[in-house]
Amino acid sequence: MIISGRNMQHFIALLLLGFACFSPSNSLAGEKPPKAFLAIDGASGQELLSESPDLKIYPASLTKMMTLYLLFDDLSGGRLKLGTRIRFSANAAAQPPSKLGIPRGQSITVEKAIYALAVKSANDVAVAVAERLSKSEKSFAARMNRKARAIGMSRTNFVNASGLHNRAQTSTPRDLAMLSRALLYKHKRYFKYFNAQYFRHGRRTVYSHNNFMKRYEGADGIKTGYIRASGFNLAASAVKNGRRLIAVIAGGESGAERDREMMQIMDKGFYLAERLEKPRYAGIAPVSLDFQTGEPAVPPTRDFIAQFLENSSEDKDPSTDYQISEGDTDNDAAPIYASQLGALSSPKAARALANRRLAELGPVALGGTLKVKPLTLKNGKRLFRARIVGLTDDQAEKACHILKNDGKDCLVIRP
Image (cartoon, rainbow, N blue to C red; front, side, top):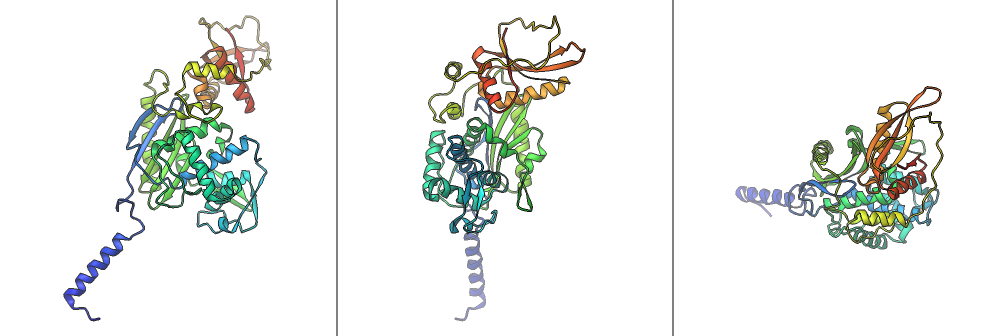
């Protein structure tokens, strides 16, 4: 077929239009991915600031937070151990990058799989975990959706364990913030893996590309995500002055831009959070009941927390590992209880410790504040006791129970 000059121009124009319409960089709307974000108070779930928090987005590798949630469920339930081996099928081994590159028939430990998902965001590992936990990725996706509904993620649908692009796999910043918060409070002992900057695999050191973690003071998790259709996504957690914020941003045009915007969101969020008299249970609160079951019911209240504490096992008071000089008494006037977290050599270190523990305990220490009290030993040495004060008796007992289960020091101080 011979095309004339004028017809050739029309043909080329149509051809270019066709390339534009079918470009893989286009989102569902045929444009660049929309931006949306949400920042919440970590303890209460109260919304602090947002833009289109219920907008449907592609979660990309933030999907792996749910994959890890279910893996942590099985670890907590005793169905797996950190040393359990996960074998790779041909299907798992064939997944596209980012991947760890495990050949078919070989295996890694559960703990290595956790690092590979949290740090490397390995798609092959996500599928291997799905097949290990539920026989097939399809049945695992069904389990992911059941858990999503259980923790209040009403606008999310999972079809795979990795976050590789599928038009049916969608979520929202609000749902992903719920998931981040649920991971923190339901699986606190495993949340440390989201803080890892690298892990060793054979002779290789695999580094995290979550630069927000390295650049923002107080950042301690969670996960990055990217596919072309979603843009650059990030779920983040940070702690300052005893308060934790959780934020999710979607649709970044680059990793660097996304990180800068997350820093601004966190800064504004902490500014607003400091103006809250006390953390209030409002906005996003369905994961509040996952202290025991992960099932939502009603937003938590002091009555609920007290009932939960009453039904929990308690530890006896531990003895102190230092001598208190005569006359050194606690003169707090109000009849309140405290959890003492340790005695350190400087008030700055004691305050930092109390800040960390207050953030870790979250709703269990609702209404508590940090306090540093000096202590003079018989030999004249001076220590500074880190405490969370203003607690009920039950709260103080439960706080120490949780911390000691994690191998951390804690002593209930009674009025």
